[in-house]
Length: 88
Image 1: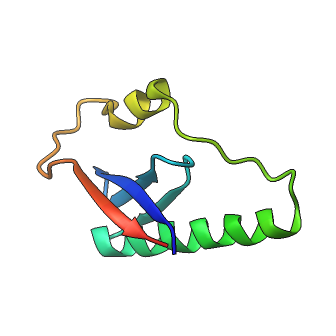
Image 2: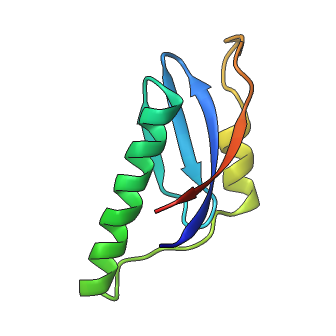
């Protein structure tokens, strides 16, 4: 089981979870749903990489993290950003 770092933020009615180690995202109506989708996506990519060495994965660039954390528009965010450790 591997250890990953996820950053969560609210985006409209959804929560979006972003994995810092590989740039994979998950989305759901709750934080838990977003994390569950992120874990599914991480497992899916890991499975694909076991059978195909050309499947790309790389740590997130600081610029990409900044874009994720920057809220577009004038939407007021009532929920704070959150960082979690997760095992997938």
